[in-house]
Length: 134
Image (cartoon, rainbow, N blue to C red; front, side):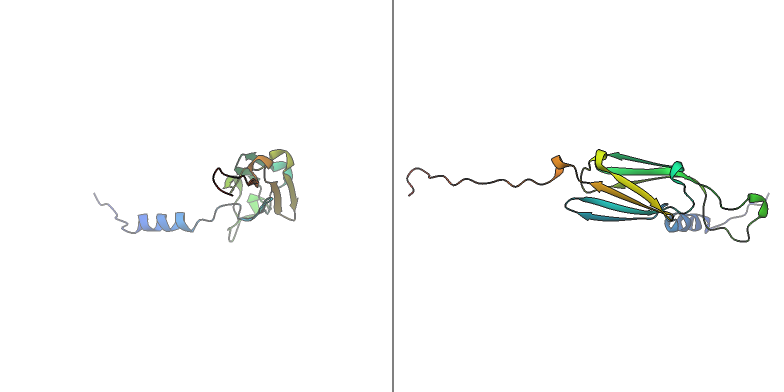
């Protein structure tokens, strides 16, 4: 009985895993007042998209449909389809009641305001006379 040995099979599998890009690709902008996230979602309709916030994270999930019928066949297919889930950790807690989401031309923009209770508070220091000084 003959067995074929593929010594580089595991290396190739590792390369595929490392080079796989997470979908959707996101940019995260941060300032003192909140976070703005932009996500590339070509082929995703707003009704196929769910957005969940929980304290200091946001999760995007949904489904991307194909643009053409499978029966037509592909010469090359690089754009994936199907379900996706992407969770983004945030640098602070956001207020879920003030989150705004817009999907325009395949780009999702999320405006996630920082929760008031998570914003830094300035503490005023009172000067007092100490016994024996002054």
